[in-house]
Image 1 (tube, rainbow, N blue to C red):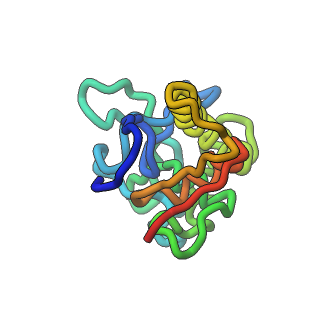
Image 2: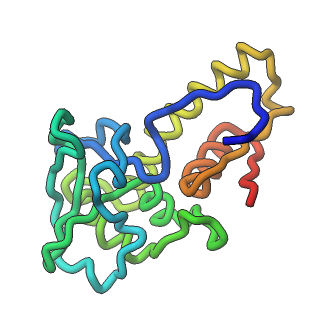
Image 3: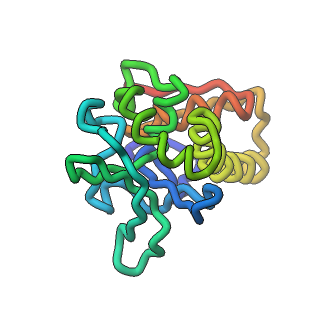
Length: 182
């Protein structure tokens, strides 16, 4: 990354991470991504293409469980829901970030999942981000303890396309400031 840092940890969660469900609740987010599955994000799909969306389960890789959520549209297109989609549903992503997408598309595509789970769109999106954030938060706490860092002196710095989706949510939840460099 060419960024000076104290430590680097790799997590199986990013802006393109796909949602996993058992049909009753969201059980995980990631580690597979829309990119690995070869699917488009709902966030970057025109809303007029998302007609009569239905939940379909996929295996991003042959060895993966078949509990990753995809959305089949009436035109046959298969999309997926991601952290980026959830953040756009909640209006978290600012227009200057790569993860800024079409919130209407995200809401339309997420609706069948929310219905399946018996949740509102906002509850579904928040649950997705909370699961992802918990993974990030755990590592931040580990690093803070290991390096004896004080929270009031910590700033989260996020890079990459998904930073605009995950970083604001995580920083707010943890009470930290954040920065996303150009």
